[in-house]
View 1 (cartoon, rainbow, N blue to C red):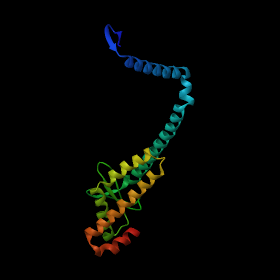
View 2: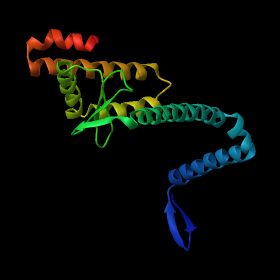
View 3: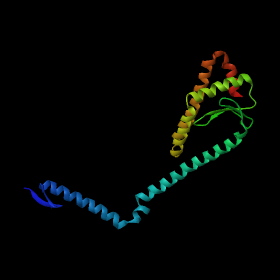
Length: 193
């Protein structure tokens, strides 16, 4: 047995099963809408959505706070490096820093402290150039942004820390491999200094 219904000027045929299924779907949908309309804003403020908004707010403040704090530290570092002396290519020397590092995402620069000896400086430059060649500065920046987004997870912080340690050890191994085993002892001494 089939029923005929008028649908926007046309006729449609439905079997009883189709009609029954459509009616059940419409009744369920209507009941859900009625329930939400009756509760109105109270569901948003006190129900399942209120808890979600609460935790999203905490997450947002945490992520924004970490990004802001890192931006502040970056600004302070740039001020300290404003008087760095350009030596050659992308190498700068500053008396304001205690250890060498690479800074910059588009044009990475190597910053060296002013109190390094020639031999030690050659090892350190090799180490920092390996960081640049491997694009570690980009990987670490992306990983930091991800760490800020997932700041609530201690495993993400541990992964970020271990990633940094692995990068450093990998560059140290590459320096020894490139310069030969004869530099192992003086290079290790320069790392300790």
